[in-house]
Image 1 (tube, rainbow, N blue to C red):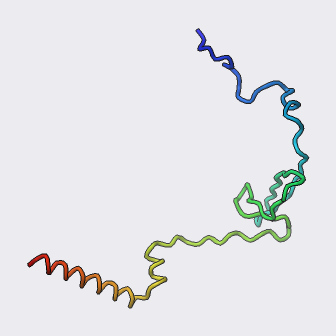
Image 2: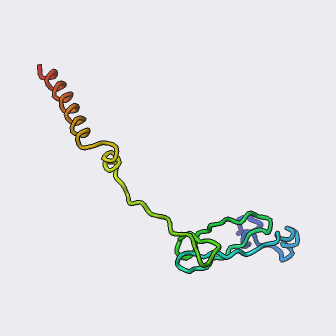
Image 3: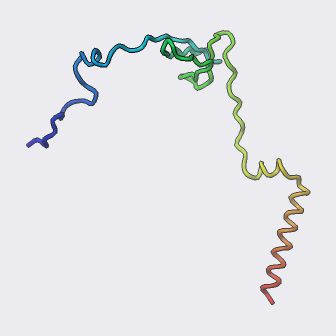
Length: 117
């Protein structure tokens, strides 16, 4: 017994070969070559009237690729991971840190002194 699905066994998007005719012709395309620092070539296609980007990501290594084979763009500089403490140390000196610590400890001691009474 079938479930009553009229399109059973058909692939989504499948249709007659004349489906291309029904959709119309595709826009004229142009292929653009990009080169990365490792010498890989990437050649995506763009519509003829589209704005072509100066930099494209290399599909083989992920580096930025440019249109000039002899002078590809330099790789992005990866900043090492910084912890929250690293950022705090950039903004405050050790003396500032000690001063804040002393203030926090004195407040804590004051609260404990009041609660013990």
